[in-house]
Image (cartoon, rainbow, N blue to C red; front, side, top):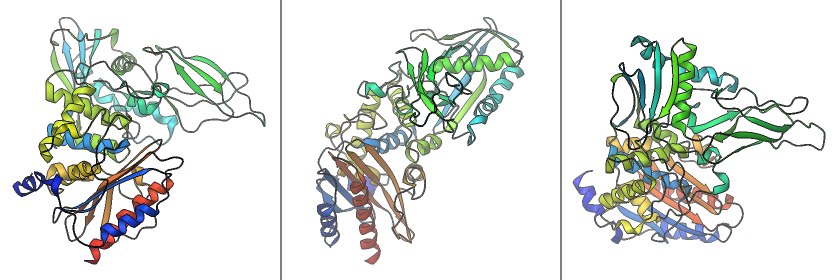
Length: 482
């Protein structure tokens, strides 16, 4: 960060609100907004002058929902650095005929979106194609028989889900387990279709022949019947049973979080090796207190940090954000990454960049699923402003955000004429919470940063979204007219 910018942020808490009409305009927008009795907090900063242009309850602690990902992503860039890459390694020990896969917390392996899957019928083929380099490396090492595939996910602890996440949603894709060795976003896909009595579960992806899936579905297709397919999974296991009714063929997969992703990946790789005439006896998980792995490095799977940032922020994928959180925890402590240590690392990063007491914010998880996350819009906007978007870290943070018509902003800012400027933002939503924070870049000047969070909304957040877009448009118009 430039010295001048550091000096400015040492005093960000005593910024003076810039003179002009924008504060009055935004006050009017907020007071007239239909936000279901909610509380709105707004902060807008001009990074050219480092002036705080607008503040409304900007020091109030708010639940940020997915805007928490901005803190996590920035902390990842701050701690790991913009050139960081996840590195999943494969070791071979000839003496014991042991293949060890050492996870690095990479959330991308087996991600259907990154594999370009658009036709779900072809998903398993795409997953098999992705593993070709892994299999080839093992074949090229002259390996024909493996006594044990060991999966080492110790880069993270085994608290796979955050304790504050809603217990009734733990099997949902957005609460998928967070592992040091992730695979297929840590969910299994079902494409059910009706048949005579029980429904067909379709081609399950990834293929998991070592698991028997129970089927207690029905296929009632009468006029008064509806689809209600769901899958139950017993805690701490992969024993799953499909239930509910299947009236018509599903064209989009039903996604169910599975247990212990590292073992799942080991079994998937073992299945693929066997299909290529390489014998595999067992798959085992390396114990947390096991000695250092032995063997020769025969393969490394690398993923740039920017890929994870993009999926975390443009697409708001929770697993990516939580993997980043635990990875910065591991980097900060040199121990298995935990949610708690990740939250502390985020708080320290914010304190270092903004010269504030980290007690003034509460990072609890990485994604914003937890309602225990707390941050003010002044801290969030100042955090964004602390990244120079012309520097590598700031540019990667900016590039990770959605723009109108993409990602989570696909249907936002449709009726806003912002020629000469571009909105780059992270939206957020939980029941009663609506957030939007990010940058507005311009062709001819440094960006604006903004953070607008509404809490305690009763009913729809449509009015909050409209208010957010009106405020951003008002700020653009004000700046471009001066």
